[in-house]
Image (cartoon, rainbow, N blue to C red; front, side, top):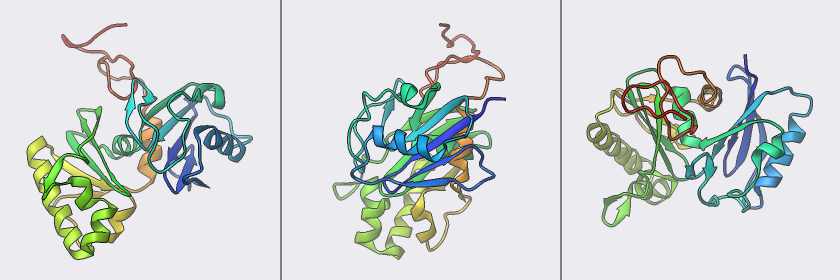
Length: 241
């Protein structure tokens, strides 16, 4: 069984773990943290740990297994950084909300909304993880979904009105994407005055589980995925490498 080191990069802390059953190590991050500083801090924190591969949850868009842009809440140097050389092991990188979504997934079609500084979004359908960028789509009065249900919306609207808009957005997106359930994650979930009907909360251990699931062997078919760039057993739409 592969030993997976999971690194969940956030604007306040970097969480590191190898098991969802144990508390994560937390390393302070912030505006001065570059990719090289993150990797060095993680290597120091896990000195003596043995791992075969690394999963990195990145707070931004990931394309073809690499950060597409520099992060908003950290320093630079992420797009061209050699993560595999820094960690001395194979590395898979995925958007942080997508990683938590994969860990929270329990079947069917599930939409994950990460209520944090911004708004993270991902869809998992029949086990296939699809990172999404819904946060900046227009919602109301020239503002985006993120402007209303991210932390800026909470600060501007107050807790009661912000909770109302979370309920509205959950209903809109659930109907538009025809999902079986919506799962909410992120630090701002504890600020909700009430939960939308049928919605469950994902805790931080799901990010660790999701990081481990990135390396799971396919059970039924190969198909190219947006997450890993790997192929899965598939039918007529599958591609072989």
